[in-house]
Amino acid sequence: MRSKSSSTIRNSRAARTAAALAAGSLAFTLAACGGGGDDNDGTKTGGSTASSDSSGLSLPKLNGTHLEVAAVWTGAEQANFKKVLAEFEKRTGASVTFVPAQDPIINFLGSKVAGGQPPDVAMLPQPGAIKQAVDKGWAKPVGADVLSELSKNYSQGWQDIGKVNGKQYGVYYKAANKSLVWYNAKVFENAGASEPKTWKDLLNTAQTVSDSGVTPFSIGGADGWTLTDWFENVYLSQAGPEKYDQLAQHKIKWTDPSVKDALTTLAQIWGKKDWIAGGPNGALQTEFPASVTQVFTGGDQPKAAMVYEGDFAQVNIGETKAKVGTDAKVFPFPTVGDTAPVVSGGDAAVILKDSKGAQALAKWLASPDAATIQAKLGGYLSPNKSVPNSAYPNEVQRKIAKALIDSGDDFRFDMSDQAPQAFGGTPGKGEWKDLQDFLKNPANVAGTQQKLEADAAAAYGS
Image (cartoon, rainbow, N blue to C red; front, side, top):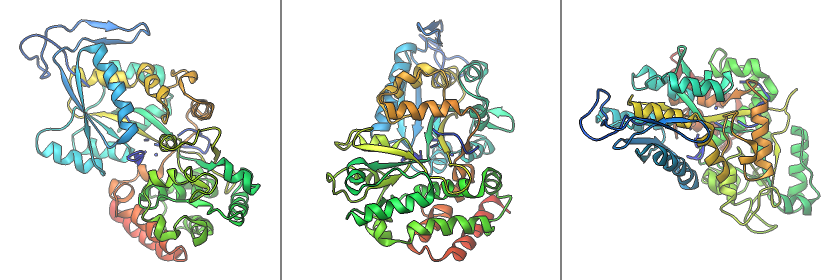
C-alpha cells in the first residue's frame, strides 16, 4: 500500500467496503503534442492524431509533451511502474518522469504546489488524501474518455471510491488484498502446524510453532500502517461491516466497546513477547520489508514463521530465495467473528495539472493494457476486471486476483486510509503512533482507546 504500501503500500500505504473482497490492500497525464507553439492547455501542438493499439485503446500522439508522476513507491514497485510509463511513452511519444515522493504525500504535494511546480499526476494511497486534494483545489476531475475507460473496466464500487462529491477524481490503478498471512512452509512442516481458519486456530498454530523452537510472528511495527491493518482485520471480522463503516466515518467513538473487544483480541498475540520476533521493542524497530524477508531467510530456522500483510509482500519475498507457492505460502486472515475479514487498499492516479496529456495518462492507467504489464511482473494486483487472469505470474497471485474481481462491489476499504491523513496516514502521529504504543504495552486497552479517540476527534473536527 502505504503503501502504506511502502511505500509498498503505501505501499504503500494502495489502495484502504464488505467482508468478502479477497484481493484488496490499498496507485493510481500528458498534453497534445507537437512542433511549434503552445495550445491553451500549455502543451506544444503539432501532431495530435490519435493512435490505437491492437487492443483497441486509442491514445493521442503527444510528441514534445513532458509529464511528471509522483508516488511514494520505491524499489521493485517503482521500477515495475516505470515500465508501465515507458510503454505509454512508446505509444504516445510523450516523456514521463517519475518523481519520488515522501510520506505523507499530501504534505509533499503541498510543498510542490506552494512552489508552483506540482506534478501532473500523483498516485494517492488513501481516499482521505484524494478528498484533501480536492478540498484544497489541487485535484482536477477526469474527462469523458477516462470515465468511459473506467466504466468498461471497473466495478461501480472501485469507481465510487475515487469520487468526491459525486465527481470522479481518482483512477484506481493498484489494489491490495490486506487480509493475508504469509508463512514459511518448511517451518510449518517441521512443527506439524496447519493453516488456521479461525482466530482460535491461529493461536493454537502459533503455540505449535513456538513449541518447535521458532518465533511465530514477524511484525513490521516501525511502519505504523501495518498495525492499523492488523486492527482493521480483527475489527471487521469481530464487530462486523456496519460497525466498521461507522468507526471509519467516526460516527461511533474509539471508546466504543467494540474497539475494546478488538484491542483485547489483538493483545492475545501482541501481548506475548516470545511470539514476536525481537519482542515488541524489536518489532517497533523493524520496517515492513524486513518483517517479510526475515520470515523467508535462514532456512528452516528463520527469525519468525509468519508475517501478516497484503499480497504486495510478494515483492519482498522475491528478494529472498523463497519461491511463492512452494517455500512461501499464504492463508486468509483467520475469522475472528462471524465472517472472514477481507480488507482492501489501493492507489489512485489523480490529475493535478489538467491537460490533454494528463487525461491521456489517466486513461492509460485505467486501461487493461497498462495493468497487464505490471501484473506480469508480480507483486501487483489490479482492480481492473478486464485484465486477464493469466497475466499474473503464479497460481497464488492468480487466485488472489480472481477473488478480487469475483467480489465485485462486496468489499471494505482500509479504514485508516478513509480517515483524515492526520489521524490515519501520518508517521509518528494519530492511529499509527497510538497502535505502536499499544504494541509496546498491550495491557493498556482503555488508555489506548482514549488516545485514539482524542486524536480522531481532533482530526475529524468532532
